[in-house]
Length: 427
Ligand code: DOR
View 1 (cartoon, protein in one colour):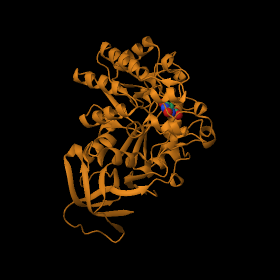
View 2 (cartoon, rainbow, N blue to C red; view 1 turned 90 degrees about the vertical axis):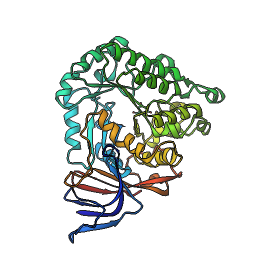
View 3 (cartoon, helix red, strand yellow; view 1 turned 90 degrees about the horizontal axis):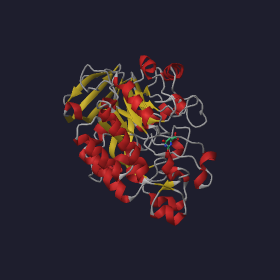
């Protein structure tokens, strides 16, 4: 299955490449990539591509695949298909499975299930056993099985001494520690952001400082332990952006990600009591959104990651306070980011590609994708200016917990190509 994309705009920020070419993908390899016409063979499909962009394949470094243990919400196959449908050629799965990813056997199980997929699956493992925050996981042994990214995501490591020891162990192999930053004593029983709206609705709030206290503690520890690598997951507050900006200025090796819902939706939406606006961290205020956008624009925020968190309908269709946290994001991330960031002029399309592809791969030490004749093809192809209405019935995810259903957005995934396979998005 070979494809010839006629007059496609290829953007690869690392290569300083941004030009319109004819792109021939043959047997999984880039056979031709320049302004001239190629002499293609008869078993090549020609795709008129004047309205399309080809970029190094997008990578989502924050995905809950739910397998093993919660396959009614998602499994490795459906999660990967949702990723491909949304324009991703790679993802990193989170360890809050059942059992948790804290042992080589679980890592091997996931590798086995994910092999030969069009989407490359990287695996993160718990910092602590069962993500319970009590005992360190066998990080170095897990590293022998290919894991180099550790987080208790869904939980935050509360005990500072355990976190300090984790940095000490991680340092011996320069492993990456990441945190879902939440001081649990400050967020107990929360349903939403603490502020005007939570007061009005009478819902228990999650103060922004609960995120910032853990973030600041971790950065302080990372520096104290010898400037260890640290990644802050799904940051959501103006204060978090400031803390990271200052740490970066001081040369501390910190990186961070933001989820599309945190820069596109605010806590006022919770007045509807729609549980698809409930997640952890919660939707914040317009001021926080402004700060996140500034952080995206000035490079403080390195990546956009979805925190794709599938839940079944019956779990979400309950009173707001009882609903589980989380929304799906793989099939809407590109459109939400294009609509709220690129079409509004907050960042350029080149910056967006850095945050969806280049930077997550760099942070996870994955090989750089080169778009050049003779290279293996790993591409995301999308229509940056196409308007469409989100229809969650078309999603490949097993779950439907999205706040964007029915919304008109601009920018649509079209194809992904990776591992000698092509996926045509049905969205
Ligand atoms: O909203 C969330 N849902 N935040 C998390 O950190 C975990 C996730 C989940 O696993 O459902």
